[in-house]
Length: 178
Ligand SMILES: CC(C)(COP(=O)(O)OP(=O)(O)OC[C@H]1O[C@@H](n2cnc3c(N)ncnc32)[C@H](O)[C@@H]1OP(=O)(O)O)[C@@H](O)C(=O)NCCC(=O)NCCS
Image (cartoon, rainbow, N blue to C red):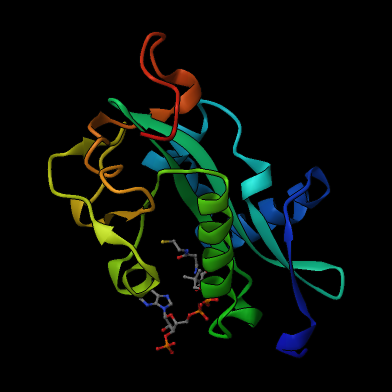
C-alpha cells in the first residue's frame, strides 16, 4: 500500500456497509449510546459533505458530517471519524478532516462542532467550546466539546441543547449564514 494510492471521495450509499464495518471496528457496539449518535438519530447525515478514503477499491477511512442546531446557531457535527487499524498514523484521518472542513466552508457552513480529543483536533483548527454554552442529549466530558469556526460569531450563536437540524423547532432560523 502506498499513500499515493489512497483516494478521497465524497460518500455515496454504496459505501454504507464498509463505513458501518469501520465504525463498528473502531467504536464497537457501545457507540450507539453516545451523545453524538443520539443526535444523529434525529435525521440523515450530509452525504455531499461526508468523505471516504479508498485504497484499491476498499474503503479504509470515513468521516461523516451531520447538520445540527443549538439555539439560534446552526453548524455541522463532524463524526464519526474512523480509520481502519492497518491505515492508522499515515495522515489519512487528518486529510479527511481537512477535506471535510474545506468542503464545508465552500458550502457556506458557518461552524463545525464535534465531541473528540482536543490533542488530535486542536492542531486541525478546533477549540474548546466554553463550558456551559451548549449541552448534549446524553452526558459528555465538556472538555471534549470542540468547534471550528468558519464565519465569525458562528460558534457563539450555538447555545443550549444540540439536536439534529431537522429536529429544530419551527420558527427558529434555518439559515447557516449570519
Ligand atoms: C483517531 C483516528 C481517526 C486518527 O486517524 P489517523 O489517520 O490514524 O491519524 P493521523 O495519521 O491523521 O494522525 C496521526 C497522529 O495523531 C495522533 N493521534 C491519534 N489519535 C489521537 C488521539 N485520540 N488523541 C491525540 N492524538 C491522536 C497520533 O499519535 C499521530 O501523532 P503524530 O503525527 O505526532 O505521530 C484513528 O486513530 C481512529 O480511527 N481511531 C479510532 C476511532 C476514533 O477514536 N475516532 C476519533 C473519535 S474522536
